[in-house]
Image (cartoon, rainbow, N blue to C red; front, side, top):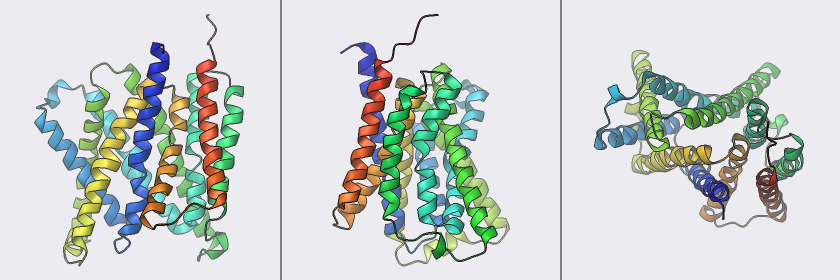
Length: 319
């Protein structure tokens, strides 16, 4: 196995680890159904931030030795990849419905691959056409049997349009984050991908504390309401798993993927989030995938595998 092949193999493995970690975000909010999306989101990123700060202190990193450009980028990624993305995602689900939102966000692997290739010019677009079509077929088959559609959403047409807008803002934020983060890590020599995932977590904590401060000033007693709930222990376990596994570990693994694969290849790895999310849900509810779901998973995996093979086979001509 050549160095490039080994790097690609490790990149795919880290992509699967990131997908497995992110997949918990499909299951845990359903388990914590008695808590609001805002409570779960803030709890998740509070834990992510606290865990990152703890790691930062354990390794005795001096923040003054880290360039300000790294801290500013991390703050921007904390918003686009974490807080801001989930804020608009939750609004999209509320106003446009879960099925439409999931379908729009489900195109992330294709959007990142195409936009990343457009910006970085890594290979001809024709290489991605068949893999992209296979993944899209899989995504649409996967959600074609979902319950609920536009007609089931209560509210005006303007509310539905607002929901669509929020979905596309969420899609745009994470697309920009995925591409910019990958390009930044490949050029940045001052920090490792491991340290950068921790710095993003610290900056995420900064944003969470600002939100909590605003809620305090506006008399929104978020923490006080949580403490009096009967299932607070379940909530605590859930947000610890989301904060450490689905946030820090996922960000760390995604950074490892981003430095080993092209942006387009890394983008395709996001499909593993959906696949693992489904597997966790099946396991938790002791159900089994339907024939249609098996077919959709087959199309998605075929598209990813074929895409990686085509990209690895492509040799960029010398100038």
